[in-house]
Length: 172
Length: 235
Image (tube, rainbow over all chains, first blue to last red; front, side):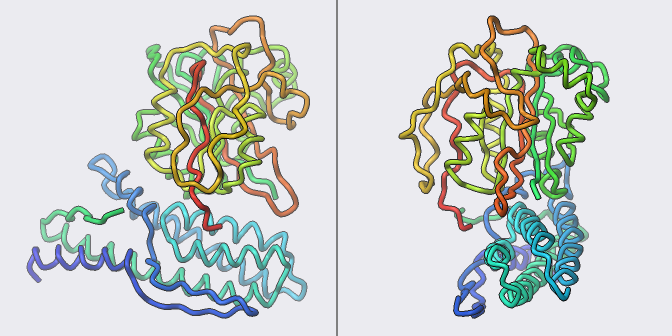
């Protein structure tokens, strides 16, 4: 594929991460969550990109990789905690809170929002609700992980072809 | 479940004078700010560290209040005993970082002596703003401090707070949380900027947010209002 085409592809793909109109409906004990017309990323991701420069050319992918490692661990712990006979919400809550924080820090909007719902079910000590929230969070997490990995691959391809990553043009 | 996080800033010269461990000797550059960042989240630590470095701060990032005390050489009984009497660490500004946009908590942080409050996720503009008043070489004088007016920026607007003089009341010392050193009204401003560390003082049963902390080297006397980012929280 030509360099120009790759760059255009990357731009279109990146834009789609912010303007994705995937509809996800989740009904949790009467509460309908619609993560509708909401991008997988928000402007905080753009903030991270501002922190990347020649002195730190891989900053974004480094932070995101840390986020993935951190999140994999947290989701694993959450699964274990929620599978216990008696769920210890004192363990569950801080994990959800931490995931909410880190997803917020990198701009993983839908993961963050799913964590917000999750957290309120923790506060209510609602096991069923928490289970469903965990599934939702996982879904959102794997989605953004997949999208970001694709984004980084596209960027790598461009760099490998000797090209430059085109600047983002979004009206944030 | 209380979590702390925070960033504290000392000028290089002050760090050396109070014998902070781990610092290589540097020329006395009054514009250089050394920030001690405290946050239990690795991702947030990396991000705040980069944000601060990009705004020309020297940064040390630690993952807990205990490590912060350790770094400052305040982790032993003798040091903390001396702390009450000495004003060495007193006047270094503390800035709280939290994901919770709750006005009463923010007010409480400010009343307890925090210089500023940043809402997470922290943005480059927030740190730049912080940086701009950290380099002002104005001595801190507790006697001139007064409380933030009650009718300031409401919680749910997305407007930045209007600049207005903001100071810390000197008489909020009676309810200090264990790790906070409240600014007592002192007779004179010491030439050295003392350090303030504040762990999350406002934990309630569920509300165990990581009130992360920023402390920075001398804040100006007349500082702009420190209410920050009162956008409508999604949470």
